[in-house]
Amino acid sequence: MTQTPPALIGPVVHDAVVPARAPWLHTLTRGQTLRIIDLEGNQAVDFLIYNAADDAERYSAQDTIAAQGNIFLREGSVLLSNEGAPMMTVLSTAVAYHDTIGGACSCESNTLRYGHHTKSQHACVENFLIANARQGRGKRDMVSNINWFMNVPVEADGTLGIVDGISAPGLYVDLRAEMDVTVVVSNCPQINNPCNGFNPTPVRMIVADAAGASLVS
Amino acid sequence: MSAPNTADPSGARDHARAMAGTKVEAMPTVPATGAAHLPPGVAASEMIWDETLAAGGYASRQINRGARLRLTDLYGDACASLLLFNAERPVERLNIADTLKVQWNGYLGAGRLLLSDMGRVMASLLEDTAGTHDAFCGASNPASNARRFGDGFNHGAHPSARDRFSLGVAKFGLGRKDIHPCLNLFKGVRIGAGGETTAQIGPFPPGRHVTLRAEMDLIVVIANCPHVLDPRPDYSVTPLRASAWRGPVTPVDDPVRNATPEGLRAFLNVEDYFRR
Image (cartoon, rainbow over all chains, first blue to last red; front, side):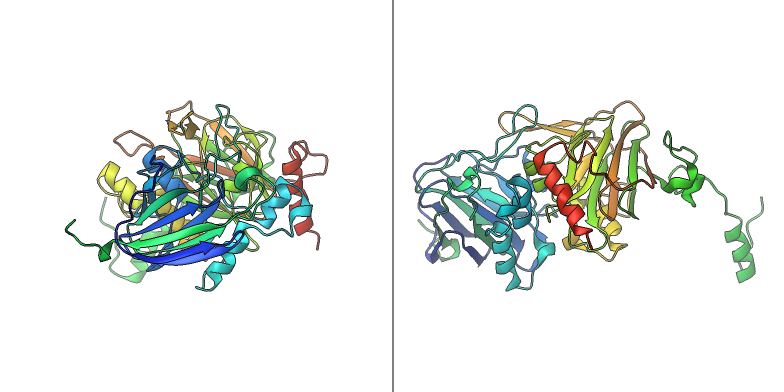
């Protein structure tokens, strides 16, 4: 865990602020680094990864958990596909751990968790569906995801839940693409649990391209 | 014994027909009403599926709303990896994250529900004499089996759960994108204070079983391959029996339906879906 973000390797090729509640989709080439900055603190960033050349290969929480023997994503975690291939690596993060078991909020699961009055509220699956639709993906492409900056502990008897976050303003996670990947983000709009501190806020996305860096330091 | 005459079609036909009636352990009983091992209290006439899955085998099957499905770990070393789809509209499928999050617990057992990605209950866990299940670690794949056993080819001695799923879903017109995160029955994973996984691999006493009740028409896909965290160097898994029989749709006073407010809403949503 590193409190101060390290220097990004290579020139910045993309720098965007994702507004609160919004989706974001971007393709990274192998070797590029994506830095996600939790600008205002405790903002869950729901995250899907697809192989850019074959989107039936995608991030798998279960494969990742099984391979690393741990449910939490930390510095050094390798994010594996449903076919066991490394897609991205957590190079560095200022947060002790991130979640990959909590899934993405949806209008439908909100009706179970909070009541039918929440069905009309915006949700992460809505963001994923509308962002993916532009590239021809649909509901079959809604699979397991990562929740950067979200805290889901599991107690000894299996009790689990989304609880108060352990992130803070300005904290970050750096991810290196291990293959060409399309990443889809939902800047989580949830207001019924503490994953966003009950107040969805913007996050920043910076992409650096190591291929543009000098090989001689 | 002389070599069979298969030099002409008639001889080949006689040779093929002479095989009928052969019994092996891993096979379906057709019709299922002929099942040799009826679950207690179940009439033979109510049986809709009876099949023993080989070690490393798989099956996919439609069972309708109200049906009961019992999976029996015959020898104590089965690992039943499970996918579930709404048979009417398979784009609705089991969602492991929602199943855990909505029920505020990571360990499934009797009285728990399996939830779809559409906020509906797909199945209820009515009985569980095993208590060791895993919603975290998913399916083996050809690469993970190759690392452990030397090869992971589907056509070889160490097929993976993922390849078995690929075949199971293909029989219903589904493909790679439809293989969702799975539930592993009979092999368990527990989570430690630091998030670490601890596998419960056994082997266990023979005859442990789990009984599911279908709360919508389901396509059930089952792979019976070694758990991905099984540390044993050999491909260790034993046959699994699937037994299903007809049953009534869950009544409104059912205790599993009414056990929690979240679960009740999952039943209300599936009941609403069938209000047509």
